[in-house]
Image 1 (cartoon, each protein chain N blue to C red):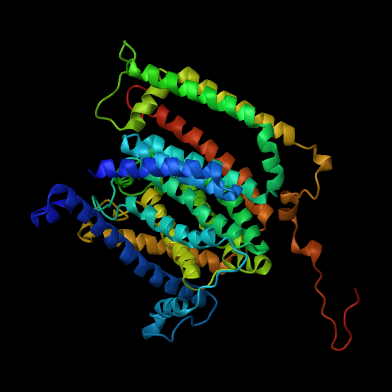
Image 2 (cartoon, chains in turn orange, red):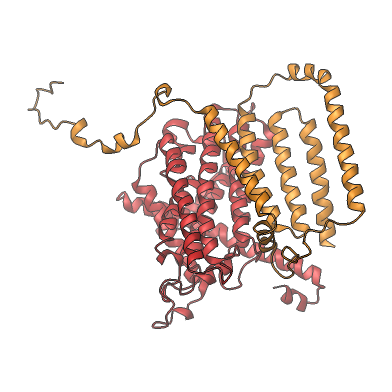
Length: 206
Length: 353
């Protein structure tokens, strides 16, 4: 009973906030609706018993990706008239993307109708392990059956990260006011200050 | 507690519902009280370190000072700036406060005394604490004023930076404990140090992790020396500049509830939570209820938080970023590798290793 109520609650909010993401006029509002939608999707994951995925969704998407999104969007200065002028120009492209997504959805549901996907392999290495938490199950699968894919995904991300660093890296000379922390720490009071005891009424020679 | 409500003649679902509500109230209401008293303690500690008296007028020893302050802000007018984005402006303090309370659901106060004993407890804490940045960012943006906005920018960058190293530190603890469940992490610390000391802090590989965790938790809760989001010399009062009355008080309560949470995490992850400091029976340690030990440890860490606040000057922003990305991140990453290597070498993960 409670689960049914919770499911409809989460599902309704996910869809409603997803609609708000694309209809909201203010881009910051859009991002906030997106966050609400992520959050409720995590709720749905908890309902099907995938609490690990749910927590990762919140940690990674809500906690990091969406914050950076919000960070960028908050600083944007968006001209709404210009945005709306581009609407008709991009309309055919939008329709094409929507059609592709619809086709994929139909294909996916069709494939699902023919039978559930078997994740375990016949040798029993990756067979579903009953009675363990899904962290342990995911860990066992990731580090045995899908080890290669997992490591490959890690390397792709590493390459992307190094690429981003290379693109934004500037040679040391062109850096503006780069501070040498070691130099700052090595500095002693004697180098910067002088102790003077001027006689009364005479002041200090600078 | 569900059984108790069932014995009153409810069916299972209603009993579960009532038990959960009762549990939430049992945690949230004392937490409110604790926040009020901890603000008083904070001010008293600073006063003692500054050789002042601190609050001493309202009630005996000034104990009721926080309640007087609470009443004062409650009676003030809530001002919403006319240029503010009203919905988000009012939502931001509510989010800060709710998120600060939400994380307490998985904190175990004693063996088995926990509202939600889920097996991803630590991840839940990470998820919730990563949400707390939204209250600040939303308030900064919605205020439509430049100082709060600067503060929001700083908060977003700062909290994301330190969450990365906190994540790696937690990985070390999880590797050693072999579980994400907070109760089991505490149990895994029983007799960890030479069979006598309860707590991971006694471990020479985990002690540096604890030091980094403590500093990162200062940064995560925006306490001095990392309180750049409300640096009063530059940003007036940071993200809460435009707030007044209860909306300001909610930020205040949320901030202190977060600080208490971080103190509790320090106690649970590295100092054996509700277990007495030593796992020996020379003195009747184990007759003292575990919750008293946990509170004593939380108070100790809170004292350290106030101590730091009263003694250390504020960091510069570039120093803050340097510490997070160039010092903590490499060290914690190195320790993840070292600790997992050590555990593999000593066969901690069983024969398969």
